[in-house]
Amino acid sequence: MDIQSLGLFYRDKLLNEVVPFWFPRAHDAEHGGLYHCFDADGSLVDSDKSVWAQGRMAWMLLTLYNTVEKRPEWLAYAESALDFLVRKCVDPSDGRMYFHVAADGTPIRKRRYAFSECFAAIAFAAHSKAAGSEKSAREARHWFDLFADIFFTPGRMIPKSTGRRPVEGLGPRMIMLVTAQELRKYLGDADGFYTKWIDRCISDLKRLFLKPEIKAVMETVAPDGSIIDHFDERTQNPGHAIEGGWFILEEARHRGRDPELIEIGCSMIDWSLSRGWDDKYGGLLYYTDVYHLPVQEYWHNMKFWWPHDEALIGTCLAFILTGDDRYAEWHEKVKDWAFSHLQDPVHGEWFGYCERDGSPANTLKGSMWKSFFHHPRALWTCAHYCGQF
Image (cartoon, rainbow, N blue to C red; front, side):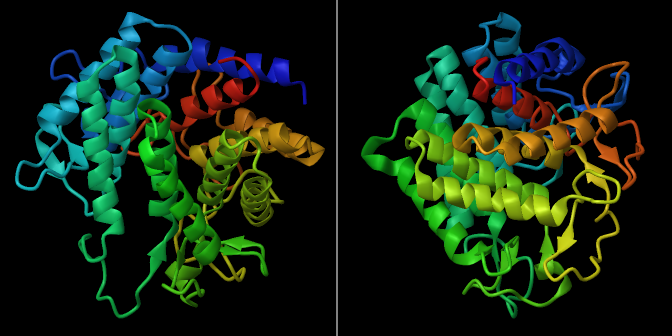
């Protein structure tokens, strides 16, 4: 792997294709905040706003501002999103964030999950550095604490089911891990507060979700970590597990290449690539079954953009930390497939969705789920690991 050339490739894609696609068109000068539902040519498909996209996009802009160049427009767009979040996206009845609002902030939908809050936390943390703002640091701590309370206080979250088949989920641990990493980076780690959260999440991942005997990472398990033999609980999401793997590898890097964490992170990536890569058409399947049984979700064999972004980061960092050529080979394999099927050669950026054979499912570049986050994060992170930022 030619690290320098790879870093320059990702830098170029990020700064000369992806950022110009999104900005300034994503900024809502009338209401504040950021649009994100765009067609291939950048035309606006829907003016509604995902609340978590406001935090995600602000964080990405602030990451660029803090590490690449202090462009005033990047800071201004991010501050518009953060202002919109606190003015329009918080339910005054309980202090929780909505999930989906109209362009002017009219609430459309609220979910029981607190992921909007965690993305607000990392955005405000990044802003605290960009603007030297103690107010933003307090906002970051507030939203982190609310996220932690909702997900990790027993009985706090509104139940989804009857409780007759209790489960534990991978998602909250993964997101808590990376959120704590971000706040530790920007706000410090007094008394090891954020590191303790990280250690707790890694312990839960090992204890509950990693199954070395069958080389699998589970999304959902019973409270004792056992596999529940039903459709939903057998379903795996390879891209999600790879994402969790690189979060752990990043922690290994932070701790001076901790060998135990490298082994855990690489195992999660190895098992997920093995189970998720489509040997017939290439690319990562969206869902698989832990026992190789049929998956009930009808989009299970589609190829979404973000698992490939996570695989780019995971294989890049695994190679950097281990020097193992198989990760370089995997990285090139993922990169070749993704840029030949997801990349728009006319307008730049990636399309979001392909059919199993790699043909475009539609022309969306942004939606309520896809925004200025996963793809630019992958480009920035790979460039960063290759010495560019």
